[in-house]
Length: 397
Image (cartoon, rainbow, N blue to C red; front, side):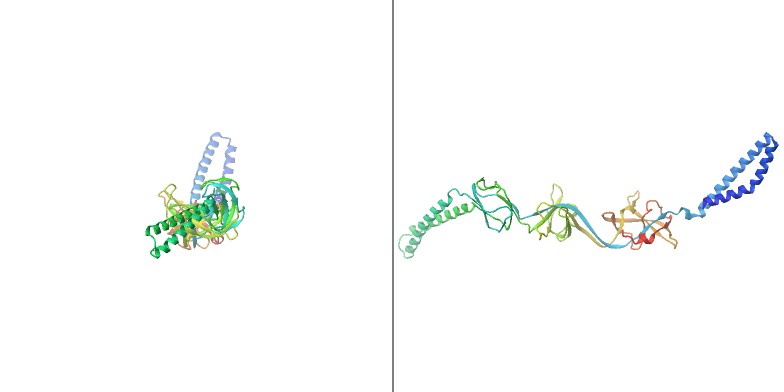
């Protein structure tokens, strides 16, 4: 519009004096006088300067009157309350308490292995046998001696009950019998260590040591047994979340290798803070009915550590910060039916973020129209024109 006014004005001025200039210039040229020609040229230059100054004044007046030409175009969205569930994203490993590498309790030769890989076993089932080095023969002899000591003791007891014999004979027979029993019990316990039994019900995952090998107590790995029923994920959580990551909180577990997502809960949160890395451990239960979740699988966790039933969320991209460190956004006020309104700066306080949105804690109410596109270019109190408001207003944050 400014350019149109300028062209019209210039045309009027030129048209009004064009004919006179033409005639005047022609007459001056026909005079063939250098002095007259120079004088006329000076007059025309002065007229041109006057016209330029008048055009400038007209342009400035147009700017003050035609404000619509300088109104920036923006888009907006309306602040709405919604449920906000913030999640803490961590990574952990799948494990189980029923995963054990079995080692022997006795030194000797592994004489027999009764199971193979993949075999299901019950708690207490005999898995392997170690040569007892003659302990069974010693036990047989001790039992014979124990039987004799028992018979002697019983006879002495019957006599003593009848007040026959001396008390010392009765007590010696009793002591000998009890000592023999104790020796037999100790030897039986030693022999029991030569039998390797399943500590819990599960599956033999690997037979590590073959039959006929010499094994050492507490050192040689015989086999690995695992039970996939009680699986869980162990994760280290930063201490700053100690009050939010607690037993019962919802967790979304993603197992990338299996392409599987599970909704579960925290079953235990440790009360101990590790001073080395300032974290505490949490256990997340993992249902494993299909038995396809294996120990040491990597899991990605989303732990719900904060929930706000009536939160206002806005894109982080619309937030700016002033020199005092305060965060602010621009909202639209006094909007007319043509979509022309006024941009107003609004200081806000923000909370937790999730993806590209952030929670506004105060000073922003539901229904307020917030500037989205163009938020970085407007100024406080500036007139703005809202475009595509209906489409933008219906979009989610």
